[in-house]
Length: 141
Image (cartoon, rainbow, N blue to C red):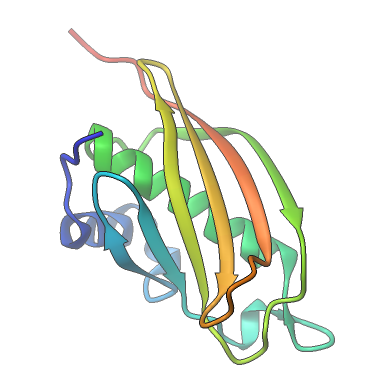
């Protein structure tokens, strides 16, 4: 699937439509095949025991599926998550950013289906896996 928005434009768009997450995420790779999105892990992402919280990992998965979809359809702020299933497989390594490796599996007129593997930076085994579906805004004539 070809891109209509590059990484720099996508980062600026994300800052514009979701200013509350400015500085929380970065785009490491964005090409026709995949997105690698980084969550800069900070104290507010941690839960007792020093691990990254489940809601923080969900947020990374959700934002990365949104970015991967928008990069392919263009800047349409009103796309919304309609489904998410996430499996937490192991404890993230403390002191490491999280990386979401995201693929758009299907992009239709109404839905985008994405697969996300989340890793602690530098660790080979994933810490979580998510499947997300986005509802896309209808095309206007």
